[in-house]
Image (cartoon, rainbow, N blue to C red; front, top):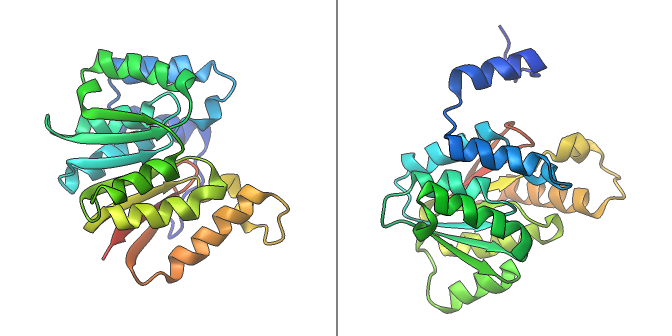
Length: 220
């Protein structure tokens, strides 16, 4: 028994996945293909993808945003949890990585639910606001360049409806966030956003130690 989050051993991690992960063959193949890439560490953990899909279902999400697609595993998880008329606007700048994503979205039968926008995400989010999409999205997920996290946070908060859920990845940053005098720009950006969210009275919050840390933020 413990009143602190367990530090998962390899055996316990395998057990967790063995009794809880319901990964489709398409998701598994995408994860395996991505694991052979140089930037494989950018892919979310499968249990995190399943957790995010469950959250989307719990809040009845129909309109979602993703900032940072990579090879599309998180997009696939969330889009699979949406109703047939749901939509995920997926923001990225890499045609190379998202070509992989689109193959698997198509194979999984969810491509029609995903609107891929290849442009700087802050530009895409600003355009959505200009188009009058404030307070219209149910769920947003941020997993992109860390130095822009604050900008993504502010834009997504405006786009989310009251009661909408914002998920922010990598907020524990491999444990580096505990180093207060870090010289790393990404680490400092994450630390600053974590501190900001902690005192932000516009939202309700919970930082979940799943994978590399996931901040759950509910817009009031």
